[in-house]
Image (cartoon, rainbow, N blue to C red; front, side):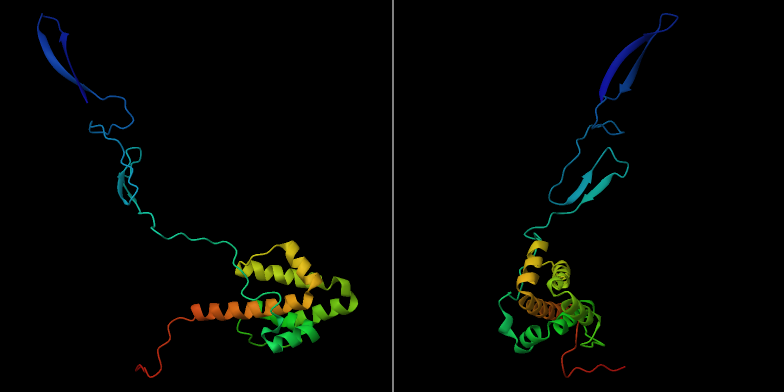
Length: 203
């Protein structure tokens, strides 16, 4: 605020001093006339912004030591780990259509309620493998890509195609083991609280 003192001459020869108050045209001056720079709080607190009519604005503190990285995850089961589970290995080698249908059903129905080995996925894979054997890898490529997107796994479409074409049975076995493992983790984390054994609550 700057104070300017001046005199105005009126008729009759009398002089009356008046005090005029003018505000400096600065961007940081408030309505009551006291200049104040906006405070930038980087550690949380209240920040006054004169350019907004809201007045005080709360600035949340930045998180310390909490950096989330949502990059692609590694597969828990390798492509060459076919013999980790004997049953899955035998199904993948001798009846790949059944294993394909089982994995596909598990992707959309984690509880496996109402599962049948002769489901739509199994019949589609068997029909394509019987009628057009060189093109049976297309379904395997599509399913592998769906698994990667659902669980945010590393890989690419080109890699999915190569694995499904060159190592179709191994890829199906790996996908089944991976989906089973991921499904169990999801059910364990999202199962909620369960009372320990021996605790009974009255109704």
